[in-house]
Length: 315
Ligand code: UDP
Ligand code: MG
Image 1 (cartoon, rainbow, N blue to C red):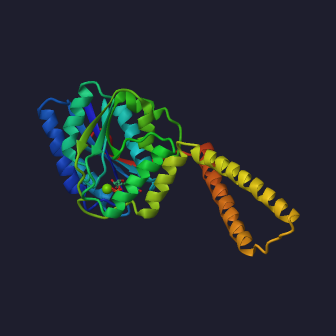
Image 2 (image 1 turned 90 degrees about the horizontal axis):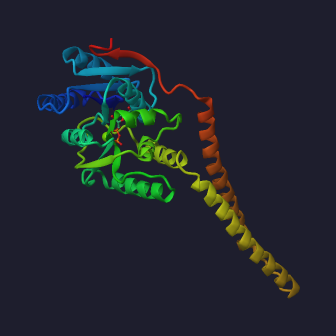
């Protein structure tokens, strides 16, 4: 049984040495205990501008457990992870994805592997609580999960992208042709046998978050629009409600006219113009989001290009 650990890295020079030390330690322990035959760590360098790739090359030189894929350009976390998973689907019996910043507990990995050996195809790493996150991140993240559920996409609460996938789950995932990736939603749709491992999430070991608020919002929007057409339905409902209101308004207007009391009504006109204008813009925006999605999907552009590789069996 071979296991690959996929680590997407974007400007992670500050954490790589420590991450690598901890991951190789876990892999070697699992090999000694004969939990796995062979373990490998694959770093996917997502177009970093710092020394990330040099460090990966050095690490791969020094230890045959380590390898790397260097993407030609920054394609974003989800696409970089996809590149690694595609590699893993072709080269190993199972893959674990984990962020480079050591926020996820590497000690959960052996438990994940044991659950996999007992027949699980997908093992979710679920964080127990969010004590180390800032108040802001915690609240926005919780709001995000709630919104996702409301909009009808299945997501595992408090699970991000720390998970194990078996060979057949990986193959199933690779059959998804879409370019707008929201991996945690896609994996939740696969089915198969699933299990969860609980861990405490730590603070970023070093460096800064590569997910500022704007990226987080974009990601949340992607998660909803890639999985659900409910926002479009809501626009229809909203339209129906406005229709009803306007019928009432027309009746009211005619009655007032007949009774001979016409109102100056400047305020109510102004308010309704602004409100209806806003509602129309919002509706156009939501439809635009979906049109944009269709645009990127029909172009069928390649997800990524691999520029270089590092590692004993690879180069
Ligand atoms: N990442 C990436 N490409 C990007 C942005 C981020 O590969 O364009 C990687 C990053 O190196 C890290 C993971 O995605 O391994 C998650 O990023 P980060 O820890 O900054 O996100 P946060 O935990 O703050 O949400
Ligand atoms: Mg992080």
